[in-house]
Image (cartoon, rainbow, N blue to C red; front, side):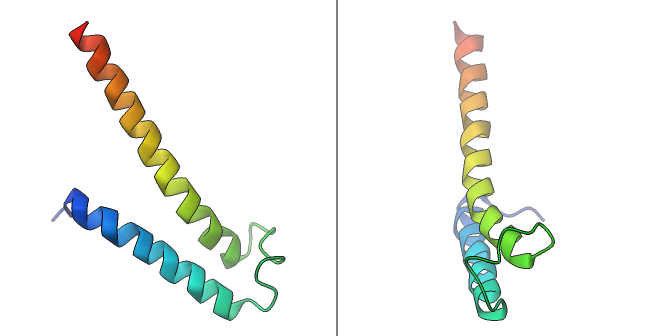
Length: 71
């Protein structure tokens, strides 16, 4: 079963925030220790940035296809 778009819009930031809060409570040096790609903290900071950027570019591509098809 696929989740609807409004559910995903609410669910993804909440999961990202939960991961960010979890890694900030687990890591001793939270902001400074996030430079290593082996750290969970690195990915908990990367996820909230990656998801909105990818959604923006997917919508941008879709809009370009729609405009190109109708011209």
